[in-house]
Image 1: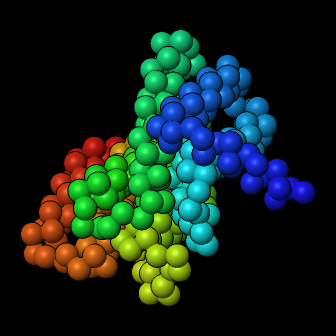
Image 2: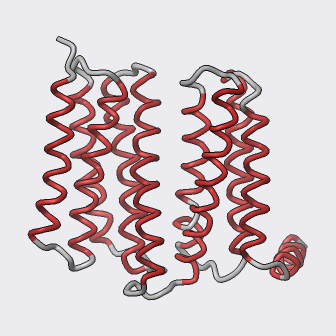
Amino acid sequence: MFKKYLNLLTNKVKKFDKRIRVVVGTLFMSGIMLIATFYFFDKAWIFIPIFLLVTYVVTWLTISEGIRKVEWIMLFVIPLFFTISLYFFYFLFPVRWLTRFPFIILYGVSLYAILLTVNIFNVGVKTNLQLYRAAFSVNYFFQVLLFFLIINVILSLQLNFLINGISLLLLTAVMLLHLLWTVKLDLIIEKEIFYYCLIIGIIMAELAVWLSFIPMRAAISALLLSASYYSLAGLVYSYFNKRFFKEIIREYIFVIGFVILISFLSLRW
């Protein structure tokens, strides 16, 4: 019975153009996010399950066809993480209309771009096409942005260094797994990818533990960790994409080196 109604809903949704579905889904999610900003953070236990469920359903309805096997997880990672991370991050700012209005616009525009990217990955365009490259760039940008937002929230809570390390391990593993999946967009993930996700995750966890004992502001530590993820993930992606050239290696090393220098210049001894 459930499958019957599910197919009926899917067929009705398919009658609308995907661009319309993306716009409607974005407006709907923006409305829910706007409502959530009127409540204090003690109501997070109510809104987090709502965001998880509604974001998954909205993302599914915007795609509504061609989802198979591991795609039921991978296509939904960034929309889910993005919505939850921005919801948490909002409460680090003063709660007023001056921050609420730009925040909702930022969320809506970003979610619209993410849903379009998810649709491109779902279609499975060839990786040598310009459309795929644009989608990958957008996805990579939002990954690094999400990494910064989530880590900033975690470090702002001033948790135990072990919790910081475990959080970085899990976050890095999930993000890198999604990033490496976009290399081929296969329906099955190779074991080698899991190994690299675990290794990079452990490196990031050790760095987070080390930074827990350094007198550095949470935003600067989050920036350093995000730059580290950007460089390490970029190198691993280049390896899997068979573009492991000297120029690319130098670029990522320069980025992490520059951020490390700026970070240590801001130390509060």
